[in-house]
Length: 231
Image 1 (spheres, rainbow, N blue to C red):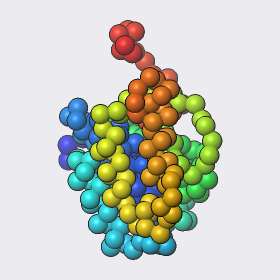
Image 2 (tube, rainbow, N blue to C red):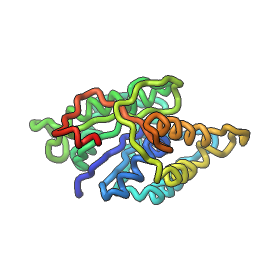
Image 3 (cartoon, rainbow, N blue to C red):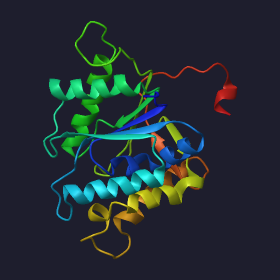
């Protein structure tokens, strides 16, 4: 397959849309190839089913115009960075050869998100191994950035804040596609969880003087050739 420019690693269906839906929409508008790999089905949940979640994911995929999407069907609620899980994700990296991986931040209230963050680190390392029985050719995705979730009410500092103002409605429409998770069975009194997601995007926009934005964190240094690159 044609290599991806950006690959989002999501612990569950809806995590990519909630955390970086605007970045995905903006990147697709710029002509970048963007993919999402979900690690689990996200089921069981109070109002969802595997079939319903697949339909919701397909709807969100169409809204965001994703270049590629796959679900590894690892165990929901008990995700672990096992050797088998590492192998499967490393083979995804080797198949898609992304220039940028967007992975969950390693501090989170949801154990699956914490495990997913560790798994991304491990699989990224394995994906470059030349003497292995992994499928595909060795690949070292050069950039790994982390996105924040909505489970843990902390305020980590962002390394990069991306203006997604023109794409806020695309993001929110993709988020609303997951009705079984974010709308059904929830209080309709404001603020709803949908309001919370939009308001967080508004807050990060405020931090950079824009209407809406999404934050990313980087543990590694980013090299630039001149200050023009940040203007």
